[in-house]
Amino acid sequence: MNLMFWSGESEEEGRDAQVSAWLSSLDPGHTDAAYWVRFHRDAMRRSRSELARRRQDADLSVMGLMSSWSRAVVPAALAAAAAAGIFLVQPPAQAASSPLLVEEVLTMGLSEPIPVMTSSEEDETALILAAEIY
Image (cartoon, rainbow, N blue to C red; front, side, top):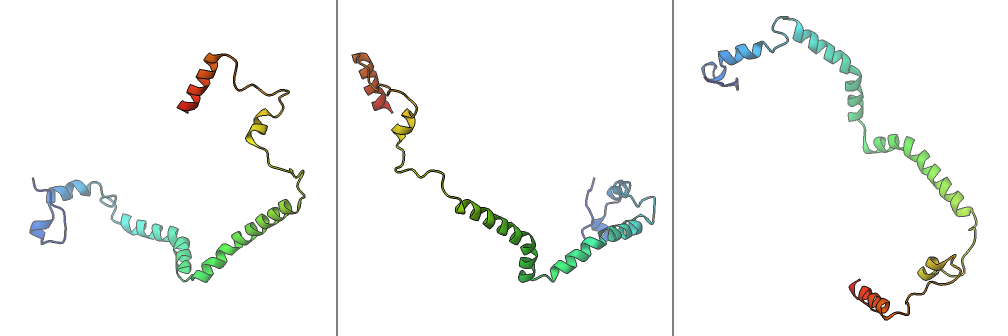
């Protein structure tokens, strides 16, 4: 069975009658001759506003595009600048005299420091072994 499709070649090489018959049953205009005319008219009517907008945007320059963005960007930038200004103007709650060290943060709130090493020799060996591994 020859399943060639129409590709602009001569009629004897191009269209297969059996495939055309099969595909014609899938054509929505097979039973209604005015289907494709109505389809084109409805598609053009529905897309008229979008096509007009695209035609108008085709004439838009870089400056025009930037000015259209400015309607949304400028107010957002002003709001961000105002928020930053408010945060910068507020005085700091309490200035620390010196930065906290990690050891101070870990032991903060403890009444007495936790001993690092214990007195048993087994624990000391375990600590040294852990230090070597990590």
